[in-house]
Image 1 (tube, rainbow, N blue to C red):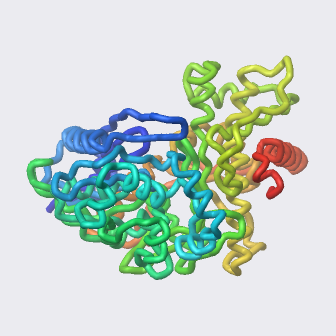
Image 2 (spheres, one colour):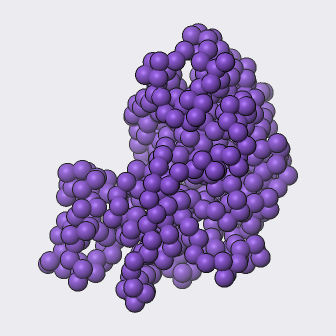
Length: 508
């Protein structure tokens, strides 16, 4: 009997495929990067055919590496960059425009007009999100309004919309299945997370025809089967989740109050709030963490736009690092008497500030400031931003009557490329004044997708059994005195207040 699961992890800069065995051990991995396109300031696009080609290639290579055939694989799980929009022709399967990436800001003015017209309260109450170009709805409308004949074709039912998971599923199944899961639907600004349906009021507000939309299913569900010729035989598709929700599953954050944070180009923290959505008073997002048996589990989410990207800037932008791994070693050697603070708002600030107009700044520079101090400032900025998110989350959690102020410091489960740096994780624990747990397996996003598919296929057990097998690599415990921590946090707050744009500076 087939006992392997293949996870497709389609990200912002690369596509990956990982084959897991019945014990969730990795048997084969393949990864391919693809081009990023920036046709105008603030515009970010992908060629949809690049997404498909790299997914197809990495799946085949991962199978070869793992020495498995289609008959050995029980199911495929898909996890994907969220909010990115693809619109395609139902007959040809070809996209009518480039994929508009979650980072794309071209619809900022549209969102601003909708806010000024007083629509954000409706949007937030239904979706748990904010009126921001980050999400899918305004991007869909832009494509329909700018591609010749697209709106008419969409209204006639000739076009299909999907986030990346839906586009890949359409291609994998030869157009037989047009579906998404509740986690991806919850990021579109069109899906009512309380009723579990596409919301007609939002479709009208954003002028999106219902005929475009996919069916919404559970995160672990039957999504059809792949065309036999793609992998040498048909393979069932049984799991889908957006990347941050998949990482939440992969980190086994199944209990209310558990929180994970993923550190890649950006950083995304997710707090499980159970079966009731918590409305944020701190401009965090209320979203769906996963959905089993028609029952959503909700979460609070905070997004940091720049995490590892700050280190990339040190390496590629101003060329003071030879490689990203060097940043932790330099930070450890930095002069403790120099107080350099970086606010890496290269593309604005995410939660809890949501200031798209501010830009990055560095404070405290002296003639003695060098590579080590800048490296430390970049890594500390990630830690400070995480602290902002966690504090806002728990304030919302407690205000909702769900969390307990006397429950003690929550443990933060971490994953992503940056967590390999012991210095950064220790500084994170120090500035949070809370333990930070790094798992043995860092492939938590792909593992989450694999678990969803394996759970739906009967290969993997119930969530409780999966959680019991979560394995700790190392716990980082706080080791900074309170006075030093308080001073650093105060300096960060001062730097933020100086960096926020005029439109937001009075709010924080």
